[in-house]
Each structure stands twice: as structure tokens, then as C-alpha cells.
Image 1 (cartoon, rainbow, N blue to C red):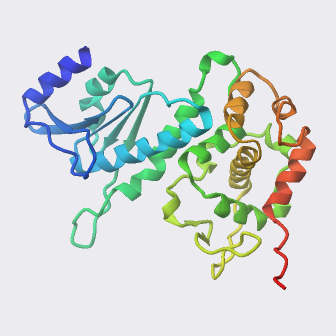
Image 2 (image 1 turned 60 degrees about the vertical axis):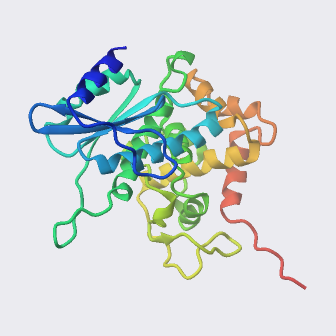
Length: 310
């Protein structure tokens, strides 16, 4: 009710609601004034709210977050919590849109400072691809950290957060990630150690699948071992990034083998303090021991070549 009243008052002092400008995209963009000179825009649905002084940023960011809900639903069989994103272009923006953010009553709130890239003539360049990586990764991480907080008091292990975040964002792709890991087999960490080590948020790759590059690799055609064709070799990545990629590859491998529910079980049981060994002990298609899982996962990184056609 507070949000409706506040938004009604704000919009009454500005122009009529505008369309998003994207064909087939139903939510409208509403404008509200703060003070005499500042005008802000908000696009709102039941699940995602995006606010900014730059109207052109809203539609693309809304759709990107709306798309991110689909993989979350696939892995957790539920909608993610309502999310509000504030895109900040000037120092006063966070304070100016604070009332709208609070009125949205979204349990997940992400502020992102945006530096609009410009060409040589000073004209703004298309912005969506420049902010998708950081915003979507932050939102996905917040969704996973907030999943079923009542399930238990234990914080989620870093490897679970890093792995599940990559699945929700869709970056990097399975082929890109495994190609990089296959190029650094000697640097891989035993799963027993991986489950206990810290992985900083900054080490988790973020981006859009269409960006097409990570660590020097390129998306596109691959050979029988999943290695890119006509692409430069992957550059060597630092240990913390290898650990983050390994976490993503391992969770992806578990999903591909076990299917529906394994990621949700991994997150919920880890929050209750159960080790990985207890999670896979109940699995149907996964090895029942951590050592067996480690061996099967490593083998998947370098599959045997296909037999030559006769």
C-alpha cells in the first residue's frame, strides 16, 4: 500500500507512464520527480524492480534479470525472491531512489554504479552488455545465499555458492569452463580440499554467455575433446579462479548426471551442515564417495576421442 501511494504521488508530478520500448514487453516505465530538477524512472513487475535516472537502462536490465529467474527455477524448483536493482549514475542517486527501493519491500536489493561508456564524440554507447555481468552475478549470488535461510544456521560453503552462481548466470558455458580446466589439469584441487577452501566473490567469473571469451578462449566449434578450434590456447589462470571454475564445473557435472533436485539438495543440506559425502550418498546416478566423484568428474574434462569412421 505504501509503495502504491508513494508511486502514485511521484508519478503525479511527472509525465504519464511510458512503454518500455521493447516489442512484446508489457511492464511500463513510470517517471517520478525528486526535487525540482531530478527525474527518475522505475520499471516494476511482481518479481523484479529496476530504478534509474536513465530510462534507457531499464528494459534491458529487467529482461536480463527476468531471464535469470528461469535457470534458478530449473535448479531450485521455486521462484527467486523479489529483487530490486538501483542503477546509479550520479552520487546522489542512491539517496534519491531510496524511498522507491524501500517501498518495493524486496528482500534482495542490489545497487550498481554505472559508468556509461562513450565514443570519441562523447555519445553514449549501448549500455546493457557493460553492466549485465556484474549485476546479474551479484543478484544470482544474493538469491543463492538467501535460499531457504530457515533450513539451518550454517553458512553455505564458498564452493557451493561459486558453483551455483555460475549455473544461474549461465557464464561461463560448460565447454568454455571445462576447456580452461583441461588446460590446467595439474592445478586442479582435490574435491576434499575444494569443499573447505575459501573462494572470494571476485574470483567467480561473471558475464553473458554471448560475450564469447574467458581466459583467452573463444566460444564456437570444438574438437572431440571439447577444445576450441582455431582459437588461442587458454591463458593460465590464478589458483582462486581455477577453484571457482572447478566449483562451477563440479556442480554442473552433478546436475548433468543426477538431474532434477541435486543442486537444491546440495544447497539445503550444506546449509544444515551436511558434508558433500552425505549428499551424494543418497544420489542415484552419481558415485557414492567423494573420491569416486572426483575421479568421474576429472575424466569428464578430457573425454576419449571418438573412434574414426570406417
